[in-house]
Amino acid sequence: MEIVLWLTIFLATFSAMEFMAWFTHKYVMHGFLWSLHKDHHKKDHNSWWERNDLFFVFYAIVSMYFFMSDIRFGIAIGAGIAAYGLAYFLVHDIFIHQRFKLFRKADGWYAKAIRRAHKMHHKHLGKEHGECFGMLLPPIKYFKKYLS
Image (cartoon, rainbow, N blue to C red; front, side, top):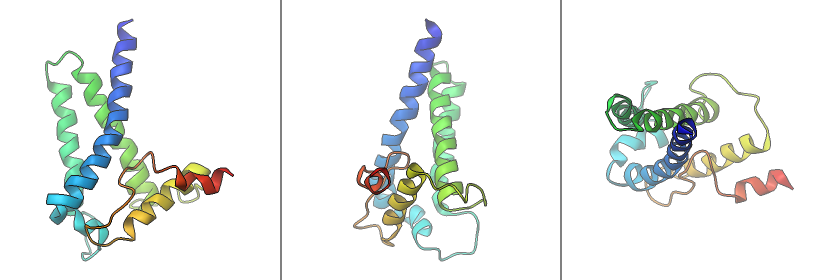
């Protein structure tokens, strides 16, 4: 029964991270820390590294904290955060932005919806008027075209 509790906490943490990603993206990245995120919307540099990558580093540190803490379910929480970070990296950095040339031919309904939602987010180069701030669960309207 203990393993079910650990797995539930892991899955709940992973799921909660989609909300955290949305919240952080909308109110922090497109808010008071726009200075770190803007190079992701407007490529005015030649570096592979973006200041925006510091958000990934922040959540990696939070994950490591839970792994190393004495909190009872810290490992499950840290693993949930790390797993979401990996999923985010695979979907956002590799699949969508092609920072590594992988998953180029993926064109299922979910892949198309994710790409379209993210494209709509990036049509706004400034911090205002953004949309589609989540990553793994885009608004349902982006699925309708592919599911009918």
